[in-house]
Image (cartoon, rainbow, N blue to C red; front, side, top):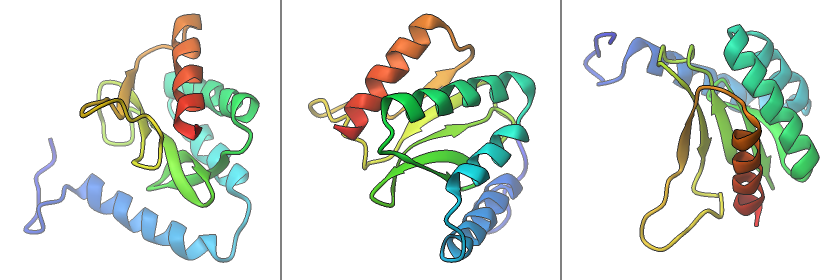
Length: 140
């Protein structure tokens, strides 16, 4: 794992924060979140790109009220301007699997304890069904 600097963040984490700052500045000038998301997906390694494309199509079909945008350099989907879910490529922080994550805006609450991110290693029919259920629950 890359060494942390005195701030406690790795070089990859600092790069993601710089990217997020650029996104916030650009969002005032640019409304085309779809284009930005598709550009980020196109940059991914093949396996991650395929899963991200399938997720993007699923969200467009099942939850068209979610607006595509980028969030910390990752494809994300927002409701009323607030990120609900995002896809993190395994290559983003050099991890062994991609991640489907949900923010605190997602309506996944289930008692006192529930998952907010999921490892994705392959996009199967069962995975697609589970992701569809989660996305629909997340938007309420």
